[in-house]
Image (cartoon, rainbow, N blue to C red; front, side, top):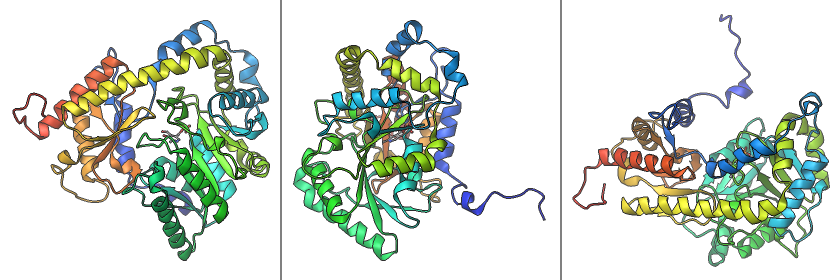
Length: 435
Ligand SMILES: Cc1ncc(COP(=O)(O)O)c(C=O)c1O
């Protein structure tokens, strides 16, 4: 008998071979830096946002002050009054809520990943399900399911335009079908989770669609959770928050927002839920709030960073959008030049690109080493990376998420490497721009 004791069966359910995690670890462990690691891998897959790092550096140099009490004292479990007031104020200025958001409507945690896990724990009984339309970002699935004895179920909405009011009937029909199937399996659906703006499609739901989903939830007595983490990166006023919906009671609408994307602070670990459901908020704080506590340094940093509201509203956000537009246009020109199809987007800082033309060079072997994972390894050999299909629940095999929000020189070098990697699979055809 082995003297090494095994972890619990419960935890083992969530471990084991994971070719997607492996490929991401290879990238993270050898990340490109123009000076210290020029042969490193340029990660054009992960949705980081370094576009505003000059402004962050300036803030750190001139305005950020740390006091020892911040490190010594325990901070509030689910956000200090000052943090919750800062977030409520931001939401009131930019999400046009139908009813003013109060600090007590906000709960804070160490990022949306943990917060989604806590919310699923708080809302669902064992064996119940959360419904998501596809394509869906796998992180939201694992964040929901891990540690919770609950399930994610999916409505196949990939053959319709789920963002557009013309397809509402088909959209809701897909929801109903998935709900019925889940019920038949003994996993009744208790909540719908939307991602708006959508990851990986970078699109926003029209107001009419959101309203129809809210009515659907109301009729079916379902919670509506909307992950709006890319809200302020939406271009051309395309974003409509679920908080802005009127008419129906919105007590069972829970909006998620965080600092990892619009603000580029992936490493600070802060995420928020905005809800009018006092019972859910209080229960979540009491039941699980302690386990998603965050650093008081992150908390103070974000409060201070947002304190100059005129700067945030008149300089920061317009600059962010201008920079997103500029890098997006570089990325789109490259994709068009080399004939890589992609889904047009209006939010976030990534594109859903179709690399099926190059997938055929990689035979399917097993469900770990899929052709997309093999293509990702091929890209890594050429020192560049895009996020493969496996990171999403989708039937659109051969699609990758291309996160273009990088400094121009890094983006240009990444695109050059991407072009070389794909050209290595398909020799030039004579056309000056073709790979
Ligand atoms: C839609 C969406 N929600 C949540 C997250 C995770 O956010 P956090 O860094 O706050 O855990 C991500 C990260 O990529 C995301 O794209």
